[in-house]
Image 1 (cartoon, rainbow, N blue to C red):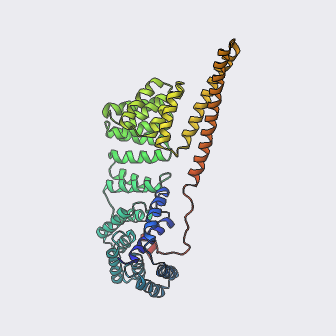
Image 2 (cartoon, rainbow, N blue to C red):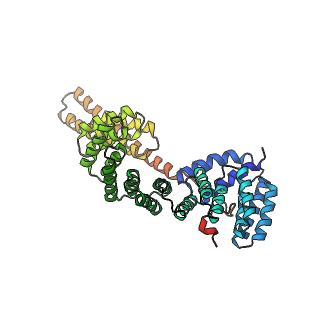
Image 3 (cartoon, rainbow, N blue to C red):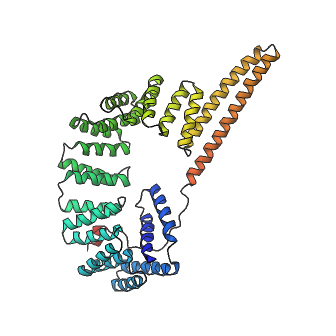
Length: 433
């Protein structure tokens, strides 16, 4: 295998980070894992020269010096003849200058060189869009989206295509809205526009109302979310997913009685939904009905025994009931399942603080009424227990601080390259004259 088949992937990965198209957490994982594997196979001297030529070609392109851009990129191509990045960039220059045939040739070669390079498919989509060949544009944009679902530019191109061809398929618009929502959850105007378009085309589409409601939920606009979920339920009153979503909105809005009511409705329809047992348990806990909270959370654990959040809330219930031993048992299980959960160490500290106060009060009473050496020994044991609990609380607070620092620095710093390797993921209007 040629060394530079790997280079294409490296550059594509780095550009994805530069364009901030990945969800942040996923980006670090994807880029770190892939770069470590790929970099072992790169001839770094030729690689550096190839990067430099692509960067210069990009600058010529941006300056409108298209002949120089082609000449520079041709040199890069001689170093890495199967580089999908360079092939796509050359195609983009020809497309910009109006040489459609050459542009198409290089886009085809780019796809053949690396069928998983999303920008090659995206650029072919741009080319077909400009020719009003909307079927082929859709095919290529959808392939690009399949390969790179978190890229906003590709989504924008799909949206432009749908608008241009007057797409009357409500489900296409709903799915596009869901894709926008995934990459920019809060305040996603694009997602709202797509859901609204879907509802304009199909006002009785319960799934679209559910999607719009979920968007409002993410924006913390609970009144709007409830309104949309209500509309979805009028259309599909026994849909357990919509009922559960509405229940969680009420839970987040701190309307615990309504939340409990809707979680109960869900469980009538789908008694094995762990999330609804959990949500019902949380609602009961917030309503200070610890007995029913315990029952619901235990049912949730039966269905999802390795879910840390269920163990945590059940620990909260036992803490509220002053059953400190069970609270510690459940919080320790959370540590086992989710060791980077800062909050759980604080909760453990609080339990040990409470136990320390109990032992201290017991010691003071025992010491006050001690009349024999045996009584004094029992009082001393209580004092020692209080001291051990205080020390344990201090240890867990320290652990919480350590985990907080670890979580803060976990992502670390990635070295960013200052020059542009790839022309980028073009939007349709970027190439329009």
